[in-house]
Length: 418
Image (cartoon, one colour):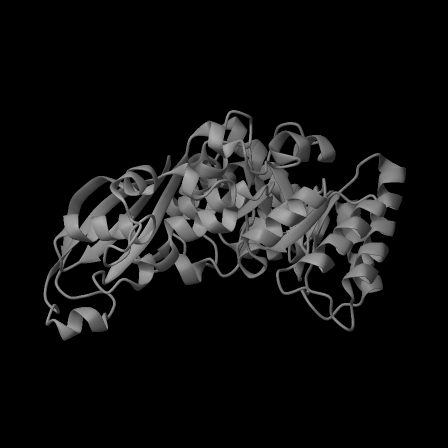
């Protein structure tokens, strides 16, 4: 069975609403139709597993014309609803799976708030979908970083540089000691910097650095586009001996990401920009576990989770939840993916991140925290490694900074940390 968990706000009896949800997303509709036999409903109908009241609302969170026509505008209940859907209703079809567990539920007149919180699958059913190509172990092996966090940065300025300027910056970041470098999410195939020209120019410098040092820095080129273009760009990355492609998940979609996974062995760096539009409201959209499960079934290798103490709205516990989900297997094989921390990160936010995640199994990306360090990118990267060493030694950052000048400069420039 495919189990989906929801938070639902409704002024109506929850047993009736949950039964309606199950019917709407499986073998039923608002009236019984010809051919809808008891045998068909027994085989293909979804089953309500749980309805539990978890709170009350004094007024509707979202407007419903259906409810307003009936005068249902007063207090209402908040409920946890769990529904099991037959796997046979989906087969192996990721867009259909998403339509089954979400679909029209957001539009039901009886609900004035609904959020899909989690999707759980039988391991054998999960195994029928795509798995990551590199995941944790392959990413680490490619980078030659066996244990500590993977430290990296983002191309800044994120737009406006031509391919040769981007390549020169990447060469400097490779020399500074970056493990990983990525495009920004708004970096596409611009007239001033076409993605194929960027790939060729950047990989030329990455190979030169590899030939000189033996280290192949991973660069995540943003190839977000229509599906055929993404496949062509992935082929070019591979031909240029690159190892990673970045995709804006929400704007490319589940099917396109799944197609890309089947086409290439590159690591797929999943960027979730736009996720706040479906997640920030407590009673609308999709929770992080449900969201990540769907895209993990498409076969991504890395997943952005935002950052702690950074510039975005996420609560620390939300970021930690997302990271822990990435590091939890969904199937019989090891299909864990690398959580990617970014957004306003620097050496001072690293200790709290490590404490909350209780793991070094993460990618820690700093734009300004590396690029704007007073001593330059090499000093910015050194400050991250020094902060990590301090955490492992049980030292406070201020104490550790006494004999670590790069860390001291980061603390002075960006704040005292957490």
